[in-house]
Length: 330
Ligand code: NAD
Ligand code: UDP
Image 1 (cartoon, rainbow, N blue to C red):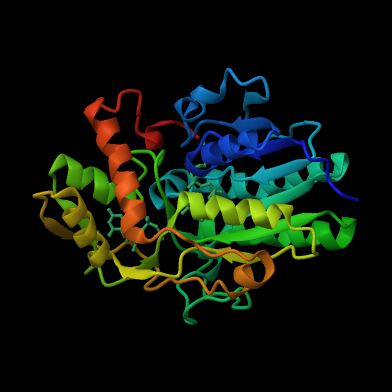
Image 2: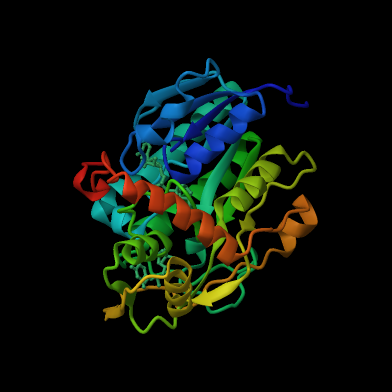
């Protein structure tokens, strides 16, 4: 059965960085959007410009508790994504991933909605296969400080596939690799926003370890294009599908790029490397290319310029209203 052109779509975590861009994009395509968020790391300010739109609805709710909505599609993004924030209340992070997945899957089953899970490259842990294809089962510590997130997301994938096998539920799984862009929280704690905010403030840039670990950074617009293509794909491809930019950089290279692009006088300082920090990460995006005709188009330097412009404006306004999310009880 095909989907109507105009749908009612639920976005959990819709007031977060990626969720708010997704809500905007779905509204622009003419859909009705229900944005559900407990505002742990998201902000109403991310979607305040959408509140006047008659097709947009904001619901403050925690995905750990069941909820009802008559919708055609569900994008499940609710979960803190920054290590600082998912480790702040690690038990809650597991609940959010696992009970959140059970609740969205139960809802999807009841209303026969298609449901997409925002999974993560963290399911590969500290990978021993490089770059990472979807067929790689990963190298994950189940008792470490990152486990609440990694294992929570792995169980969520398991639940999605079990609902697909047991109830024929129409699922999609995308594995997101490090994505950055405007609307990241200035206190988010992830590397791109940290380095840009530090550079713009002229304070030291905090490199964990020696900065030789690598990441591959995807600009948010590219990521969302991949996300929507995976959701809309009707050719039987449900994933898991890596979506990310294969351009790979050391963290030190990233710091140097940010300093060059901001013209900052910030110095580099080296701090201890957190445990289980993956040494390398780069997506193999062969499947996304083949099945979705998707590949990223925005180079790191171009994406960084847009993100720097966003934070520059935000900081010049004093970034008021930006409480530290780690101080909010999630
Ligand atoms: P984010 O922290 O900005 O967004 C997460 C949103 O989920 C926030 O609005 C937060 O308030 C909300 N949320 C958290 N717990 C909730 C709960 N219990 N109930 C309801 N809402 C809750 O992070 P993001 O970068 O926009 O990430 C969005 C999704 O994408 C997450 O699921 C994350 O795991 C996944 N992801 C992101 C990246 C990335 O690099 N940005 C990488 C891999 C996976
Ligand atoms: N990192 C860093 N300085 C910071 C924040 C992060 O050197 O201020 C490093 C971190 O140790 C990791 C990489 O940057 O190796 C990416 O961290 P992030 O928290 O953005 O995401 P991760 O991919 O680790 O989940």
